[in-house]
Amino acid sequence: MIDATVEARHGHRLLVLTDDGRSLIAVMRGRKSDITVGDRVSIGELGSGQAVIEKVQPRRNLIQRSDAWKAKSQAANIDQAAVVIAPSPPFSDDLLSRVMIEASTQNVTVALLVNKSDLGAQRAAIEPRIVLYKSLGYEVFECSAKTDPQGTVARLAPWLAGRTTLLLGQSGMGKSTLVNCLIPNAGLRTQEISTALDAGRHTTTFTRLFDLPAPLSGRIIDSPGFQTFGLEHLSESQRLHAMPECQALLGQCRFHSCTHREEPGCAIRAAVKDGRIDERRYSLLLKLHEETRVNAPASWRR
Picture 1 (cartoon, one colour):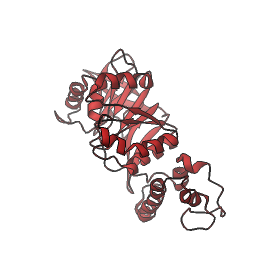
Picture 2 (cartoon, one colour):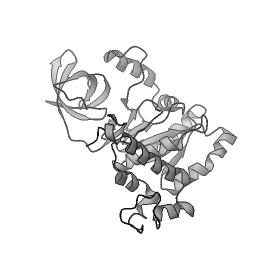
Picture 3 (spheres, helix red, strand yellow):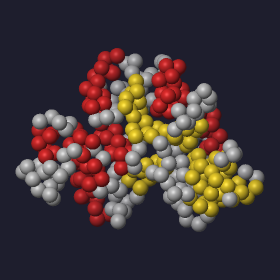
Picture 4 (cartoon, one colour):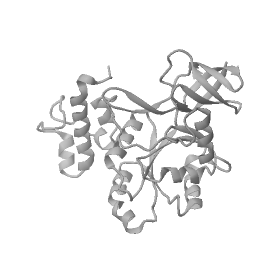
């Protein structure tokens, strides 16, 4: 068998990149339906550029989002994640924090790529929110992929070097422009992948892996823009431990079974009241709890 990495998937067809640099169309043997981009697999060649996936190798991590019924894998075996945000259209703190929580549970470092940083007053308006995320320990890169592509590449190159980076972002943040800035032939390569997977000539709504061209090094996994990012697969304890401002306060509440909602002596609510925890972030905790409570009867989780 030959070792390879999954480059893209559409339905039951996958594009895999062998360790000796060949791209092959692969199908899954049996019901291995959970294979995702970034997975390391062992394949058997069938000839004529075709292969069958015989085995999925153990993962280092898996980034996914979920609702009450199912989970959708974003990518596996990544070294870091970059969330692309922008001052216009307004980015969602809710979606950003959800991605950060998911990444933290998988021990994946997250950075913010603030695109469209040339938008003057609009960029200044989101500065307090950027300062908040910096205070929580997240690295922030300022870039303008459209108006300063060379500067953007230079700024990101050292952070991307030698790593596999998952790019995430809600629709409209300029993520596609950023990808084309880092990988000039990304559009052509996407069409080639789409055609190979019978996904339609102009389909770009699938996750795909790119090798960064020289002099850059590393890999980018580009994922479609999203408008929702459910975390039904995570427990409340996992969500709390994934928020750096809450970690140090866990165990300090008056009651061991504190739900951090109405109980007296709650350390987390006290931190919200005196400004140590941002109210938006606390509201997200309450929202995630409510989502899980309401959807519990239909939850796919064990």
